[in-house]
Image (cartoon, one colour):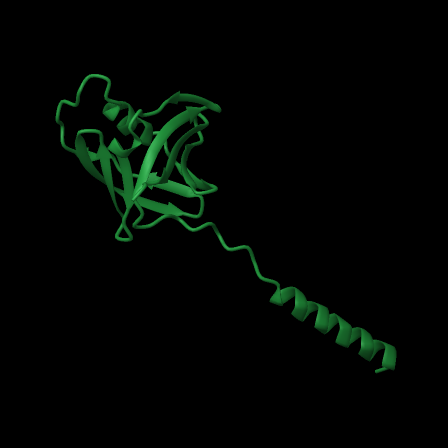
Length: 143
């Protein structure tokens, strides 16, 4: 093997090793065991509704696959799964108290039925719906 071919082979091996050693982008961390507050839902980029008191509309994803949900004066739970950016949430099983006038408990629960994806927007979690371009926005609850 000529000196030029050896040098080319060594350089090719070094470049391959460097390319393999480059860090890959880590997927965004899904918020497990974090209390989240719903700040509103957008459809097609336009805000459709949002609560006056976000602390009455919360969500917590447990590592077990259970989601604990506060729907104003009601409590609920569902099962969740995710695969990359794909997200599914089972129908919510919850209490059926009659919340005060102006409550968004039914609207909030209904918004979950459109969700099929997720992504992070800074510190906010967006649960997204591809059919109607919807996004439920959640932020970490204040301690």
